[in-house]
Amino acid sequence: MYRLIRPLLFAFDAETAHHLALAALRLPLPRTAAPDPVLGQTLLGLHFASPVGLAAGFDKDGHVAHRMGALGFGFAELGTLTPRPQPGNPRPRLFRLAQDAAIINRMGFNNGGQTAACARLARHRIPAGFVLGINIGANKDAADRIADYEAGVRAMSPYAHYLTVNISSPNTPGLRALQSRAALDELLGRVMAARPAGGPPILLKVAPDLEPADIEDIAELSLAHAIDALIVSNTTISRPPLASRQGGETGGLSGAPLHDLALARLRDFRRLLGSRLPLIGAGGITTADQAYARIRAGASLVQLYSAMIYEGPYLPARINKGLVALLKRDGIQQLSEAVGIDAA
Figure 1 (cartoon, rainbow, N blue to C red):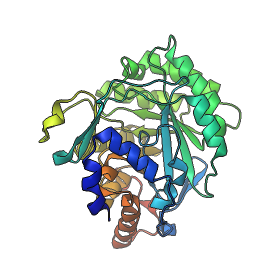
Figure 2: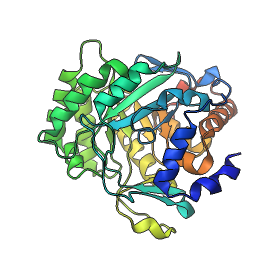
Figure 3: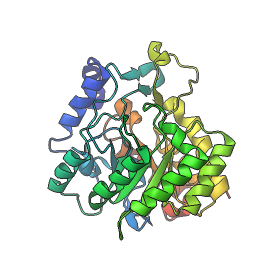
């Protein structure tokens, strides 16, 4: 069905097509079969029926993320949400690179703000067994960006199963500087202190464009501040060889060309952290084989977004089915047993 619909969506510019997809997902959705129990695992004090999650960026304001279990996702992450609404960068700011199965975006944290999202989330009913994460960021013009993250933790904690601190988007000038050692030390200290008693797990999302010293600092500080998990990784500002004419657009590159770089960063963090900190693999995952490779490299969970643009909304259900077959092939009884077995 999606093969028939995709040419119609691609007739629109990328951002208009994205809004059309969000609108369609508000309609009643045919449900896929529940994920096989062999894929289930408990992590961060939460049960994930499937390791496949929807990455932040697809549903910035929390309109449909809670409904994504119908497509086969075990969890979904909405956002990035900032304390105050902001329009983001000027359009055009989202580009399909169809020849490369990739996307370039320079959206700039466009969203309606946390107050509006809270009101919306209070009306939603999250299905039992589905995990909803919220990704938080800082306003572009914030005088104290760390204070924006503190505000996000306080505002969004009542609505999230987990929170993600996003300091790795390349589309807010200076934001990635928060990954430097001194800035990250202050950020993590203040963010963890802002979490209310009994509040949700806090995750940190990092960039793939990190030097070895940066990776070591992030790993050390994440442990020191008791961050609950790392998401590896966000989009890249690097440019591997690309066939599409829009490959030179500025912004973060996601999709298939990110795969190798994101996998390499995941391996780096697993080598430094071992099993002391859960890792979530994101970036360039399109198939069950790629998701399985990320899991065997050390990811307990995986996230995708760009691949759905090219493969359709029921891609997570297909990946679930493929993961079950791969586990059976390898004689592994439960997915959690496969996490990191190639990193040992």
